[in-house]
Image (cartoon, rainbow, N blue to C red; front, side):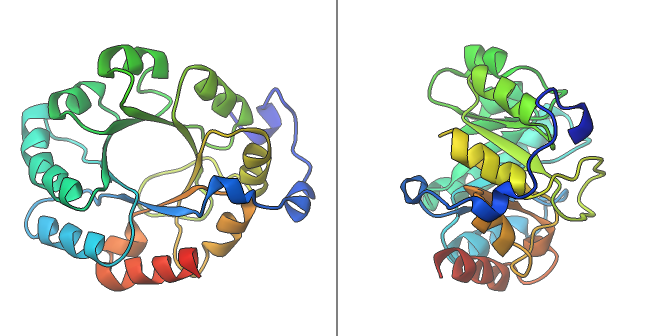
Length: 228
């Protein structure tokens, strides 16, 4: 679905200039997404990243491995997250999230319904849903019981192929109307994140900007932006 296909119609582009972040929502927080390869020394890198500044959540996102292998990779990372009081979120797989006793699961549009995930995982697990650039999909996710909605990709990214490129105003619209948190994702760096924070993002989901270089320095740079 593209913005032109959204049943709600086009957004007022000037809305973002009138939007003022509601202080009751709290400050925007960092949400780390794993790189494709979480073997080798990655557990040490994750520990360094989580020790460099406040991180709200870590999403375990690996592709092309069976659930048994994924669980073996996930277990040390989950333990590190628990040590740092960081929510451990599993990407795509409700069954893996249940197997691990994860704090949450993140669902793409092809990964099932939030209601179904809730019935399997119970009331206390965080459920996020990818909504691309669609207000309609986000409202549907909220009605289905999601705990947060994710919009993106806001900037070019090499992490995954993307077809949806929302404008920051969608974050302003969502934050002005709904209490449910929203996550901004896609090519976000410390240098380009400020407009998304100002627009109303509750979380910045980041991957390449952290793991492609010095993870400690990157998390510190994000922390300086978010807490400045």
